[in-house]
Picture 1 (cartoon, rainbow, N blue to C red):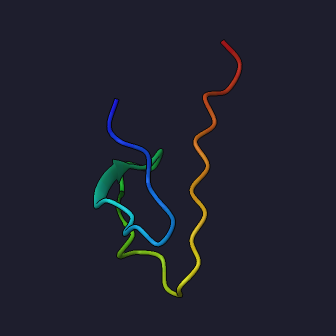
Picture 2: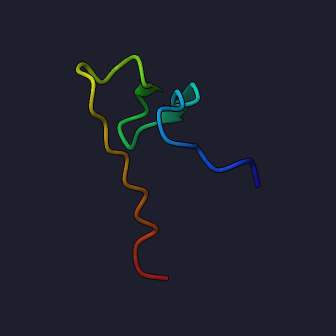
Length: 44
């Protein structure tokens, strides 16, 4: 596991494959200064 983000740290660049096979490049695809990313694993 990587290091935790500190206060004021830049969000690392991530590329995620979406359910419709599209690609989301974080944080570039999210405008604005504040961002929230929630990973939900669903029911196993």
